[in-house]
Image (cartoon, rainbow, N blue to C red; front, side):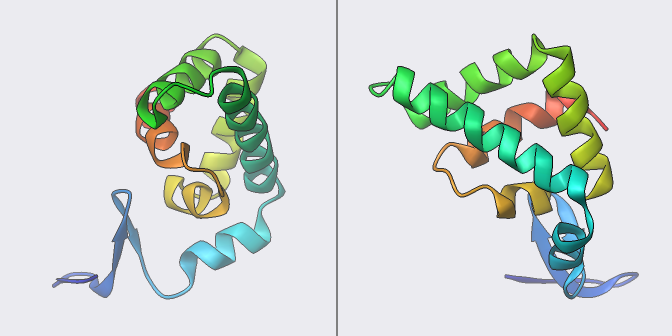
Length: 112
């Protein structure tokens, strides 16, 4: 969906981030930290999905955020990735049904 915002022109709003042109694709292609963060999150989400197959996507997202909050090393790697790109770029890279719920919670935990 296009949004017209006078001072910024046309672009897309994805997960609260203003996206102009190919900003997200450029961030993804230029950031090893973002790529690593995506892999770390995907592994976490895959593991939780396998361990708790009957939980809802929202519950799995909350469990992933809890694990993120309690793992300083993982938290630091993901924060570096978000700072190198954006939450929108990270969400675009994650091919997992829980990704949207995780990103919503992670924004509160990470606050870059």
